[in-house]
Length: 148
Image (tube, rainbow, N blue to C red; front, side, top):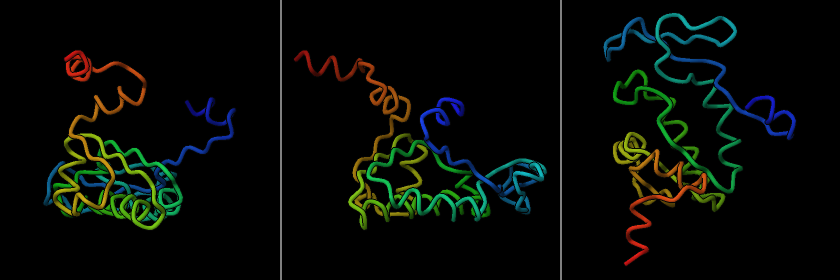
């Protein structure tokens, strides 16, 4: 994927830092790890530098497809990346007129927990189905409804 992107002049934006914990627990003390230093423990969220780097890219987009939270948003210490990206997507929609497509049950839960759903263009709990539809695949439920 990276080679194809480079060949086509497309930039793939990846996290540069992570919020890590020693265990998968809401009580695990968070530490920030930089990509070049490696991840110490479990990477449970993207870090604040990554959120800051992603923000202008997301806000400048005309279409945003978001499928999956950035981290373990259920744990407050590891929800900052998800909240930050969510705010960027909401901003792109409100300020830039972007079409925001939110896919997946976990992502929809994030929206319900932290934001008003009306700040986004479309929310679907079917993350895999949303991606298949974007790939151009026929969805059985849509086919069944279309045949009636």
